[in-house]
Image (cartoon, rainbow, N blue to C red; front, side):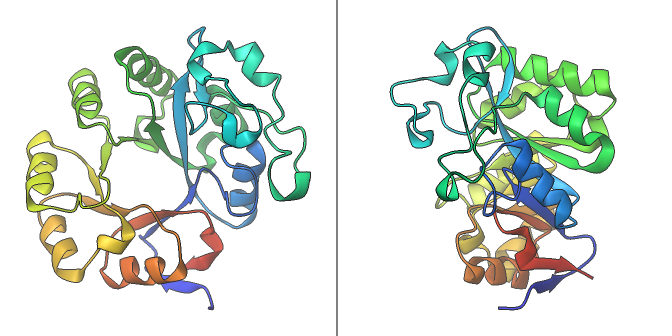
Length: 244
């Protein structure tokens, strides 16, 4: 399939970086997104044992070759000692490390819009993230997302001007959830790509600034979400889409 053309305003968001081509949530994946001309990235945030904002999706590290290790029980130094690249594609990315949100901001600055997903919800994590965003002057460059509705309410209470996006799981594209997002003043509502239909999206877009897809697994998912006229999507393979 040739790259699918989308409107210029459509958010092509490299999911955990260009994670179809490099180990997720590593600098290599974000550099690959740059190389593909992508201007928006998504990453996941948890707190280390010593309170660092670390960029990692899973609560445990089994999938990356480190069984019985939990992110929340390890210090930043312990996490950074791990090789987070060897598991991917035959080990061609050996030596890639876990990074912090600050390190991503340092590396890419204003080159990206950042979709920062709070993976392990806590007020401490949200407070630290908001403080970092404010310190960098990145409020307009960051969209805070989560599957956890309550943590997004907390973010909105602490920083009413901060844009947030609510990720909903399978079956979550419901009238009830759209109404909850509207009532909370969320900037984005983010259902699964395979639940997008033109009618559903049009109705939600009439009340919420942006409808953004996630859970893209196939090119059919991409085509379905684009045909429904949503505002963007996270995708492991950002070169499946081209703006213009």
